[in-house]
Image (cartoon, rainbow over all chains, first blue to last red; front, side):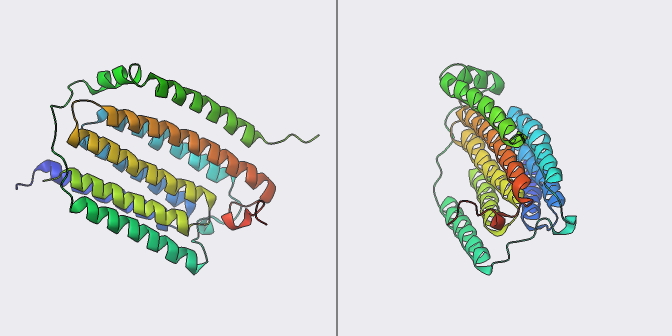
Length: 171
Length: 102
């Protein structure tokens, strides 16, 4: 058992990701939450790079850290009408908090323990040399129906978002 | 030595934080952000299992891309709904959204 530099990088990146995720949940200012969310997305992109999924890491940075976070920050700016320090207060009811802590702890401990104590299968075969090419072949080969459905879903989401956000015009 | 276990544990912890956020927040935008955290945890699982169990193809990465597509659609429609409700209610507090409760 030797510790390599990859392990150190993993520990740093995962610690950063978990800390930023905690920041998203616990900060009381929603702008800070959104900025922590960008950090968490970048940390997840780092995990993807660490897993030899470079293309997916770039997609994560472009779509999540670029597009989705800008969309969220725009929406926050559009719907803010009180002072900014009190925009992201926790729920006042203690019962909801206890349920949240209970369910989150149950999920994390049960799943974590079952992952930790189970025998995971071993690696089968060698890694593909050209991940992007392999993705493209899958996307336009065996999974072409899912690809087309995803395209239609995006189109419908864009049209639906425009109709919903435009609202009803006053007569 | 970092193995599949550690990646799956990281994803589990992120998912748990997302679950807690969904329960404990009042602001609708904050709840959407927590859901994004949970979707990211699922993506880590897909890619890690792809690398550590069957690296001879990239189906895990492909499904992570589909998850990203669905998450983008979900967040755009969700934010449009929040903006539309805000126009009527002047609030993004979930306890004010009781139009369909009786």
